Length: 112
Length: 118
Image (cartoon, rainbow over all chains, first blue to last red; front, side, top):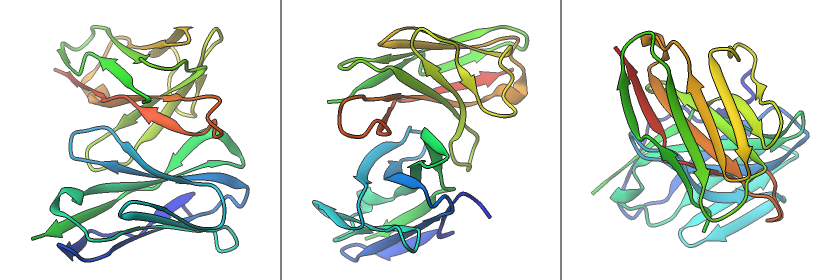
């Protein structure tokens, strides 16, 4: 089992819709959870961080964390074509304290 | 902000030469910096963790004698790819951990360096 798994994608949604990205992790001791966005040929850009169970909202983005289920998700409301990118889930803490473990990424395409 | 820069952004070299990549945190001090490598259509793979003033910690399978890391100050870490070969061609990305922000684990990434070895 991979340490961090994301829904395989690619995910395609129409402009204005909600895009839902999912991630599960295997290390129950993980403490910090991040979503990064990566455009083709560019480095990752931090979108959201979440540390406690529940929801965290920032503009059109909402991160959801459920430590009991070892599950973290990212919702993008009112999706725009500029949101088209690869979204990386990253987890830290537990046995890999101070280091990020990345999922394989989910490619999101928002079509007009 | 939390700006991390890398230099150069792109380098093409001949097989057998060495290439140095610099990573700088511009507006904060970074006790810890990380070096990643990303091959096409793959996720980021951590190569090593660089701590200011001490030896880097390399991930399993990463040759420490081939990928030399120096973290001489709180704002600068360098990665030298020695005797580069075509299989070392990749996108190298550094990140810096921003201490004292309530989450040591938060990392900010540099723009990356695309290395092509001919």
